[in-house]
Image 1: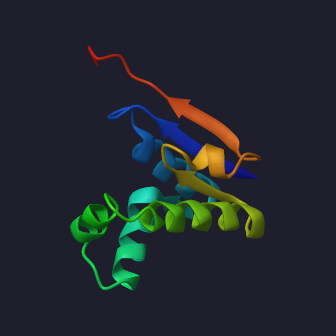
Image 2: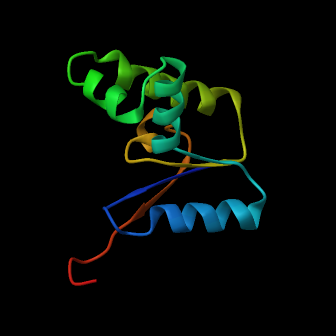
Image 3: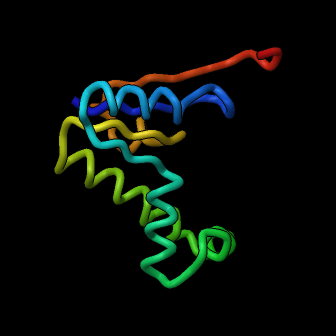
Length: 102
């Protein structure tokens, strides 16, 4: 099983993903970390990588394709990201929301 977690800013995505991964003894992936790894492979900081993404769409497609391949080749993990559910359509999808008052 693959669990993808997405949701609104401040809804607790990282907290829930960390708790689930710890409870299930599964690896946890998060898009921020995947983007940092992709930047490092190019010898860039995350800020430089994000700036590059304004003109070079491969920065997004690299991470998107990594997610897609991860979903095809692995099982029993948690992935946290706003679009992970899309790139791993067979995942169990969790969406977290929080009211602005919270």
